[in-house]
Length: 291
Image 1 (cartoon, rainbow, N blue to C red):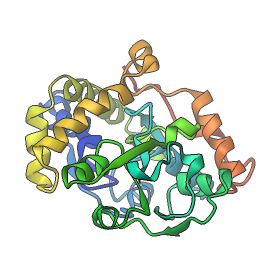
Image 2 (tube, helix red, strand yellow):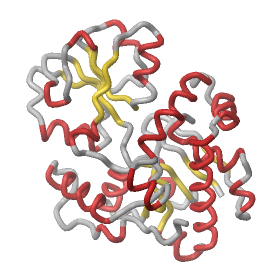
Image 3 (cartoon, rainbow, N blue to C red):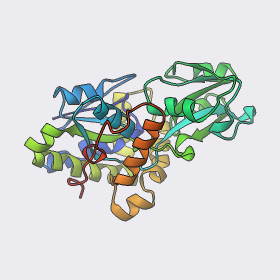
Image 4 (cartoon, one colour):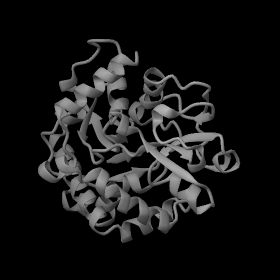
């Protein structure tokens, strides 16, 4: 079995690597090869076409894909609170995303959050440019802001002498599940035992990663040396509050509910990302394989 990541190996994939490193996939009777991704990694296309059995993406990408007739289904969602943030300079005085004005903002075109921000806020005097994938420009220009993950880019910027302030996108109410495990409708129908094994081992992996990430982080660092052990340890620590919120503490890691999916769909329809009535939200996810 192959599992395709949506980015280079980092802390937001820690639970899946922990399931591999600590033998949880093997204990469930499956061999899982984890494939690193990168900018615009075509995870959904690879899963939808059967090139790989499983993938990692975000909930908004699942809905967008289903609106394009891609038969992908969410199986578990580690991050109840999305780690996406907008990173601004402390000296800018900006304390909320709605206050963004008169600066350069680096964001990817593809993720729904960037379109949602444009729809929701005036962004007066904001020049939007492509996300560079690093913090170099941020460190050089005090009128530069950029997207990031709250435990990644801000940590790097601060370690290099920057003054980052992180504005969590989830705080404005746009909060897609993150690091979501997906497969196709066909895989679920034809190989439910395999799907259940991968889901349950992944849940176990995330529990292990949050409790003790050390060995897993060494493995991630060996695959992606740009992610030092210090930033990985920070990422694992910061992930606890984003994964083990009240819902996950009550219902278990990976839990998903229809209201969260419905709210996200309505936001994406409002921002003209998905046509009204384009998808049935009940088809976008299943919780039947969760422990």
